[in-house]
Length: 339
Image (cartoon, rainbow, N blue to C red; front, side):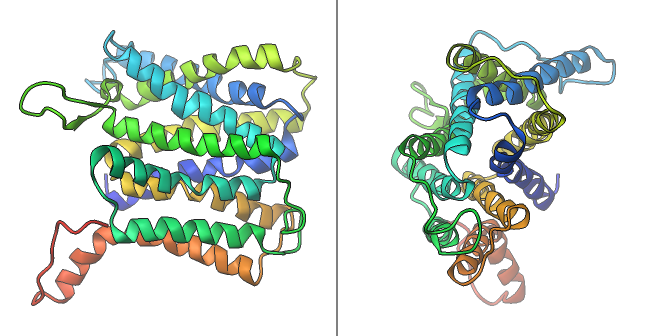
C-alpha cells in the first residue's frame, strides 16, 4: 500500500475517536461511561471475529485469514494489549468525556505522543529526533492555547471544569494508549541467543489484522462488562438519538477505526503513530467549534495552527531529506538522521 494512503487511512482512527466527546454529550444517556464503552467495543469485536472465521473457511481467503484462534503463547500478550488499548483506554475515554468538557480532555490527551516518545527513549535507548520532540512539545502548547484561551462558546477559559476524576481519567487514558502502542511494537525482548536484548514484536501481532482487532475489542469489552453491570444502572429505554450515537461509535468509531489504526501501528514508524494521536483532541475541538458554536479566534486560532503544523512536521519529515536530495544532488545527506 502507498505510504501516504496508509498514513491517511490510519489518521481516520484517532480522528474518529475525537468525535466521542461530542457524541457522548449530545446523543448518549447521561452517567453511563462503562456501559457506553461495552456497547461500543463488544459487538464490534464479536462481529470481526465472526467475519474472520467466515473468511478463514472461504475458498478465496488464502493464508491471510487462516488463524482465527490465538495460540497459547499469544494469549498473554493479547490480554495485555486488550486491557491497554481497549479496556482501560475506552473506560477512561468515556469517564473523561462525561466529566470534562471535550476541550479540556483534549489538552490532557495531547501528552500521549510525548509519553510514547519518552518510553521509546527510556526503554529502547532510542532518543527522539529533534523534529518529533519539538513537535510534541509544540502541540501541547498549541492545545493549551486552543482550549484555555478566553473564547466564546461552551468551553472557554472561564468555564473549564477542573474535575479531578475526569482529569485523572484523561491522563490514565493517554498513558494506556501510549503503552499499548509501545507494546504492540516492542512487546518483548529476546532473552537468549545472538539477538539477546533486542526488541521483538508481541506474539499476538502475528495474528491477522481482522482477527487481532476482533479479539482485542471482544476481550476489552468483556473486561469492562462487570464494571458496567455492577457500578451503573440498567440501560433506560433508548431513544432514536441514543441508538444512532451507539451505532456510530460501534461501527465507525470502533470497528472501522481500530482496523485502520492497528494496520498503521503494524506498518508505520512509531514516531508517526505517536503524533497521529493528536488528531483525536484536534477533532474534538474542531467538532465543538462547528456544532457547539465554540468560536476560535486570537490565541485559540494560534493554538490550532501550532497543533496542525506539529502533526505535519513529523509526518512529512521522513520525505523531506529525499525530496531535498533530488533538488540538491550536490549536497550530502545523512540517512540515519533521526526525526
